[in-house]
Image (cartoon, rainbow over all chains, first blue to last red; front, side, top):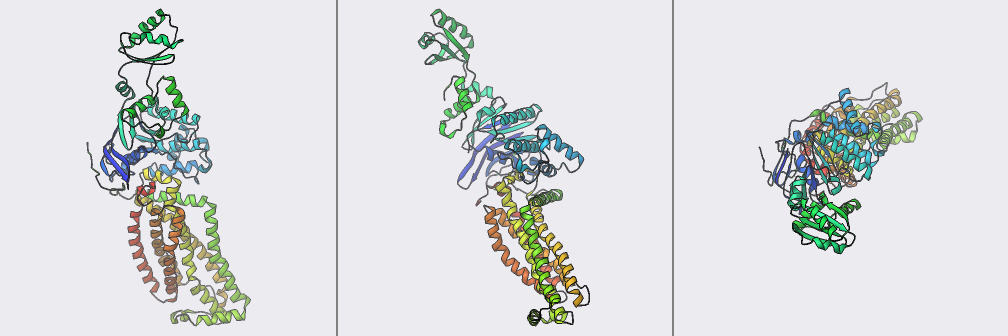
Length: 330
Length: 293
């Protein structure tokens, strides 16, 4: 649906995109993942034709958005930007009506019905008559989402849609996005919050410094970085774990106090290892297969590309908790 | 699969224009006007400005001359009539000094306010219109929308023009009533608006407004903040207001086709200026990422 090939875009001396190549498959949720300043917003702007690239090719629905075809491209896209971009002096209804008219849904009962239907999708219909200036951040985001789907776009572009929301509202917005994806829409979402992308992404593009570091389905990418199964084993006394360090099929072994992380040739080795530990008198407390999270993947990619710089990346307490639970470290 | 190379091309994605969509243009204009109508801090000063120049000042001056009959004031004003051009003096009506003075004030000397008021109001609206979208973040919505930059530019031009022109039309109506009620009895009945005033309001004023706004919108697209736009617009519009002031006075003083010629020239300049101004609105400027912003 979207093909971006070798796109570069600069603003004076600032290079926002550098030879960016990405693909957004039809009917899937693609997540652009990267730290602030990675070029995610500029990528969205290039895709809708709001900005033209200085170099490269962009094709959306088979059209070049930077030409006169941009109007058609934009009329088939729904965009939610990082700030809701709403008119505070207008009511919620008038904001949606403005969009309805620009996207040629017309005026009248039919358009009004569609406006109320879109607002109801995001549970904002009861507040449509209020001035948007009085809305909470969550209400504004919901209205912006309603505006984006008003004209039933073929492609939804969401730029950090949960930015500024409390966790509850953020989770609700992500659920709504999931529902839209289930409805068969193509979604491209930008985020720097790994937890947000978890469970939502069918396709991931990791970006940094305006370029894509890698892309693909989460499972494929995980198997690329963790080709062998990994298991965490814990015992009451950590020293007992050393008994399986050189066991057949253990490809690598590392231990931190009472927990060991083992890379195995096959997951079928786990019963053997537990049996070995038991027979050696060890009391096994935990056996947990390691399932790489998006966060693990993200940092693995960045480490692999020599780009890991913890200070550049915004993390949340939730992310750290995930990392701990998975028994990994950066 | 069609792929098009954009190497070193357009820094703004205008990239050629599809046909003008008039409905979208009016949607942009209507929505901007609706926001202005919701904004009390805009329409209240606008009403006060219009009321002051079109109602309060003329009413006080004309009543002073025609009803109170202050001899000294009338005498001084009568002397100033001698400096009017011959063509204007020939048009004076009324037999008494009060009548002639009132007529001269109403028809000739208040003309500039019909220009100053709309230009001031429209400049204030126009200056904030594009930079305002950028400052409020709503430029992002417009940049991603299918609305063309020409549609956005012209929609905003209309939305800036209407408040000023509407104030003038309403003020002009009120002014006509005041003039006819105060000066009319002295000069033999209702006489206002005169032909020259009709020409000025309907033919000369609109292109001057358009010229002013085409410049102001260009500034609004290029500056960093609304405050900067207001400052710069003041500098740009002031000379234009002075030109319009002198031309409008000339139109009223002059006889025959003077107003038609001035208006025709102003329309030509306005059309050229509008045509060039369209290019000032770009998506990158709406997003606030264009060079120099």
